[in-house]
Length: 167
Image (cartoon, rainbow, N blue to C red; front, side, top):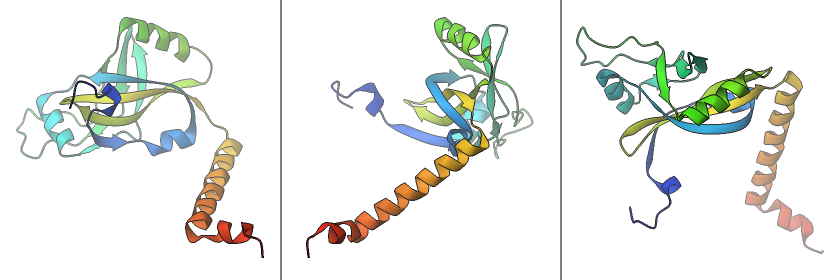
């Protein structure tokens, strides 16, 4: 990478995503945080053996923990292999944690992980502050996605140009 390259353009190796989070929650704000892992967890993540679909974050004793994330035990690990579903501490700055504490105490806000990836050899989690969607909001979003998909399909087929051209 050149020194002129912005940090957002650094190479990211994605391990796990949570697409259902954007379906179930209105995303208000996101943070990137580090995660505390053991050696066999890192090896298992590099093999892509993780799931964050059921995961959520919780603030305890002034620290943020990721609960419910499943990292499959490393196949070549020995008896000291890790527990697949355990609390994992997230590494955030104190100001960010204080902001999260204030936000989570509000009614209806929760912390959900959106993506787990490696950046510059370090495991990172994108943590989002979300407000739960109602059923009608989910249906609205689904309808909007379907109509956008159909419009894109029509554009790719050339149907839109043909309809606008004078006869």
